Length: 190
Image 1 (tube, helix red, strand yellow):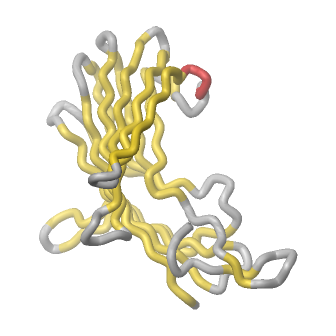
Image 2 (tube, helix red, strand yellow):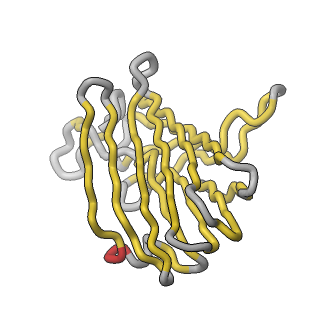
Image 3 (tube, rainbow, N blue to C red):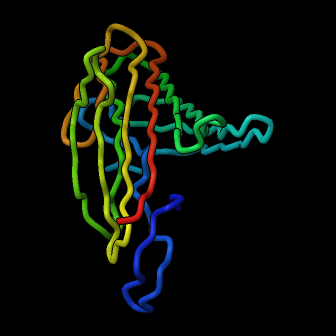
């Protein structure tokens, strides 16, 4: 649920709070084998919420293409800017492999339409964001905007922007790798 996002219910004809695009979606792959294609390969899920600082710690293990991946995810919303959500994903492979992490804003299964999509937003000081998405839910009387920014930690990675996702790839990954994702979103009336 996103504060300020509203739509008319398609059956009841009343205002309601519709689903919004998920700003911190992701995927990972070893070679050409993607976890999103083989979700049953993830096991040992563990989550804990730290109420003292509002952090969600998630951990799981996945085996893709013969490589075991230990994945740690830290997610939280900024206390000073509550519409800013951040996530850090760390992946440690059991052996050398070609590792790819993908960060994206997911509209999958969310009724509505993308009004605007911009990839690679620059400012005079350099890159401002990886992308911007404006989304209107079905029966929309408002719309939502989401901005995505990523940082790939480590200089041996390649970062690529495409359509509405960002990929970080390591051709020969032998140790732990991290990707930091920040997304900010808001809803507004038409």
